[in-house]
Structures are given as structure tokens and as C-alpha cells.
Amino acid sequence: MSIGEVSGMDVNQPKTNYLTAGFMRMAARVEHIAARVQGKGYLSPSVRDEVRFVLDFLRQAPKLAVDIGGNIGKYTAELRRTTPRIEIHAFEPSAVNIKKLVERFKDDGLTNIVPLAVSDNCGVTTLYSDTAGSVLASLAKRRLEHFNTTFDVTEAVKVIRFDEYWVDRLDKRVLDIVKIDIEGHELSALRGFGDAIEATRVLQFEFGGTNIDTRTYWQDFWYFFREHDFDLYRITPLGVLHLDEYRESDEYFSFVANFIAANRRFAA
Image (tube, rainbow, N blue to C red; front, side, top):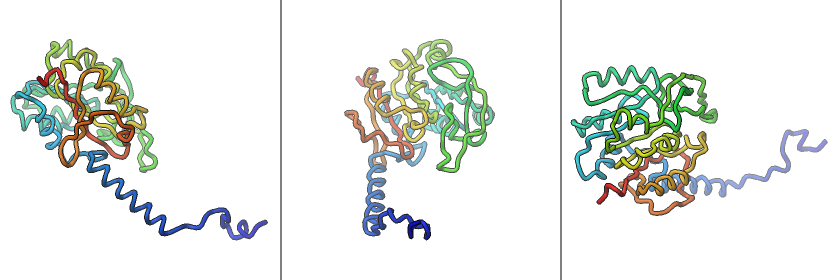
């Protein structure tokens, strides 16, 4: 038996270089700050700013908006505040949040609460969350034990492809604004847009840690929007940054980044 075994020490463990460790912590901090300045993990300071940036891309007053992942209606309420005459269709599958949305917009004749989830298929699926009505709720059972969070709350919800709703309920109208915030399932929702994506002027969506759970990558979004003739922008503390090419460094999963996709067909 060795001295290390007697003492409980790992004699093969290299000695800590405190200078190196301190430098690495400082480098990690600089890396984090640099990422946030670029909009990676920035989260944008408020819903008000998100809506403002989206509206800046429109050349005329918007008439129709779709909020996929309405939660309790913060984004929808901000759209209503800034554009009083806009028609809004807010999708939300959580029963707890549906009640809150209905109550919040009960006197708003232009806001339609749609009690459905959106994906690339139709049917019934499971909504997972840490607590009922959680902002983290997802169609994926996320693994967040490293944050001391478990997704043990489940709810059966109806799910549709958006293109069916667009045809049946919206008569294939132009979609001035689309916002998608559904915790990692944004790409699935986009794939269920069908021809509706061509009728979309400006679309805002999130990308970040939730995409680890759904195994989707920034590259998937980049090529999807490139194939449909959209320009991509990332919201940063200094405004919107045009992304002119795909970069592997943009595969950033720490926290959430907000993006805007602008349809070139409506830019002229």
C-alpha cells in the first residue's frame, strides 16, 4: 500500500498552479463579456427592445402578427401597445397559461388565443416543465440536473403544423411579424411552416442552451433561412448585427441569443 493510499491523497494529481488557474478564470470572464457584446447569450434587456428591433425592419405598419410560445402574453402585450391595430394570434399549449392569456386579453377583440403547440407534425404530445406554466416548458424533456432543475411536470397538449392554421384560419395572408420562443423546438416549428415561410416578412426566434436538448444547431437555422432567402441578424447590446456567413463560433449554447430573420422578398 502506498503513502497516497494511506493518506487518501492522489499522488498522481498534478499540483495546482494558482497563477495559471487565476489567469484561466480571468480569460473565461473576458470570453463571457466578449460573447455578450456580440449578442451571444445577451437575452436582450427587455421585450420592449425586442419588439422595437423587429418593427424597425418593417416598411409599413404591420397588420398581422403571430406569437408562437405566448406564455403569459408579455410579447403580445407589447405588440398591442406599440401597434394598437395589429391582429395577433398567440399560440400557447399550457393550460395554466391559456387561462392567464384569455383573462389578460378578454377585452381585446384583435388578439386570438390559440391553445395549441406548434411543430412539424399534428397530433397530441407531451409538454414537459419544472412547474406548471413555467417559462422553461418544452416539448423536449430537458436535462437540467446540473442546474438543480428537473422536468417532472407533464401535460398532454395538442400540436399542429403552422401551415395548416395559416391556410385554414389566416387565408394565406402575409405575416408581418412572427415570434417563435418554444424552448428548443423553434426549428421544428419552422419546418412546419410550409409555404407560410414565404409569406413571412420578419421573424424573431431564440437559440441557445435549449438547442442542446433538441440536438439542433445554428447551422440548421442558417441553411433553413438561406434556402428561403432571408437575411439573419443577431440582437446585441449595441443594436442588430448582420450575419453574412455561417461561423462555427456562432454555435453558442450558454444562455440564449435572440435573432431576427428578414425576408428579402419584402425588402424592395
